[in-house]
Length: 445
Image (cartoon, rainbow, N blue to C red):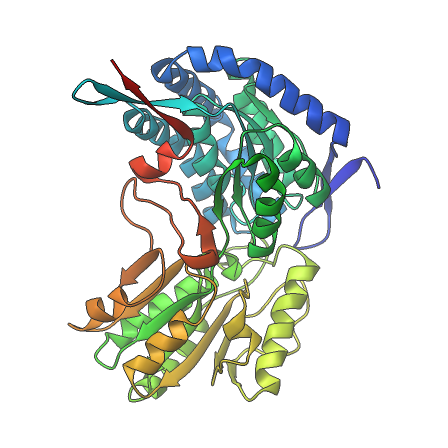
């Protein structure tokens, strides 16, 4: 295997650059250095660690345009979304750091003090679809809690991770934050090393493998493992608002988002009008490379992902689904805006996470059918209900960590980002989420 990891522009196949692929020995050496740096980092205290993190993240501010363009080219999202992600990472870092600092302050119960101490060294394995934002949400709590971090970004987006690392890491004490590159081989070596915790965002399959490999040492885990989010549209819903949301959520980031709406169940009494509105909104979307004006759907990240989405479309059509927009013959790297109706439980688009710009609709006769199908999944990250006064009662029955009523999922401010069922283990965000990056210690005096 080559010792160089190549990164390509998914819109045209252009080689953007290379990074060194870590050997097993280099992974172990990085962990050894991180563990040696951990005591001094821990001794600084949360206030000082926050100050250093704020200064480190500020060092990236002058490079925002360069980082945004690199992210757009490497991952494929348009420049507006890439700029939003980079800005949110850089300016949101200090906000998260302060929230973690508050969450980890000691508390007392009589003569008992509850403290929060670092675990030691955290392995951070981050995804390609939001290569900086998702890493940031795990990296900041781990560092503020006093842990050192060895970061392995996705092999699909190594350049943007490396560029960000080179800006912030020199502002931190030596070896507190390290980066290494590779694919599943390097990830497995890192998980099996002497790290104390693994923070991971990615697929269910990889999450299960991480659990197995971490079990020998009972390593702490925080994992977000994707979704196959359902949406229920009731007969008394604002259909225009529901259709706008359905399209926007399904197409965001070319559908490559863990909380994309992937399965829509609409009351048969309003299904025809809902579908008409969906097609009307979907026709307004344009595909293309990151630097083209008015583009809001970029390329899929690679040909493998493109092939999976096309396979799901063809499977659905072969099993009786109707294509209201799009086709079964879509050439890489793009998937044109696609609307499918007649989704059935045997179709891959209902059973699996598709991760592409598809709006997939099925009609239902009664709300029991809709709730049953919405819950019939191993995933449970997010779910959405559009409807009138009964919508909150339907939402309460959905098996998801995050539920939106007449809006998307994800709470305001420092809310938890949490999945139910097999969409996650532990969670991040909120005081309780931040505390999962620290060892609770009870001291009686």
